[in-house]
Length: 187
Image 1 (cartoon, one colour):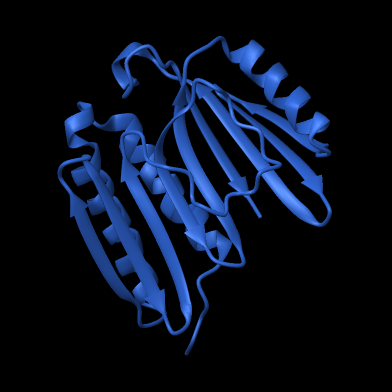
Image 2: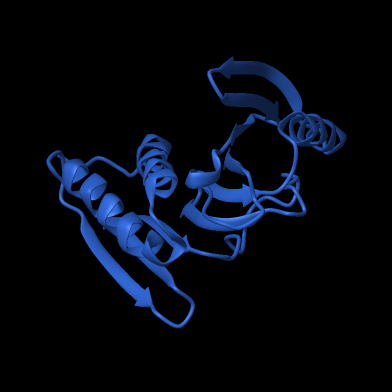
């Protein structure tokens, strides 16, 4: 049975990455732990279909690129400190200036999921995110606050944008001086 790689796979994989990043002991361990988590997610997915997985280690930049292919479909994820935004990431999706990316996932023609660390106050970051997104033409559809996680769902031209922001305890922080975990999923 052929199943194409869907945004739900990105979200599952990204959720595993986020959990892994929050529990990593120090930044040097991030890429090893994330690669293991991503591989686990891919293996679980393979029980329904056949998928090719490749992992490329860039030790110089302390980053890993994980590519999962199924037929013509491909999911590409880069993890580590200060990864680059995918080259075609939507320009109308505002991101905080202090954001340091720790993972970026791309599924061509379907969307993106990025995670990063942000320095700032939670309420100020949320207010600024909403304002900048609205200024870029996004309309807020839902805001959800559960425990320490705030999720903002916005829409524009049939596309969906999800911001998830949570404050991290000092022992959970992966980037010095950056106290917020900031995730974006955009189609």
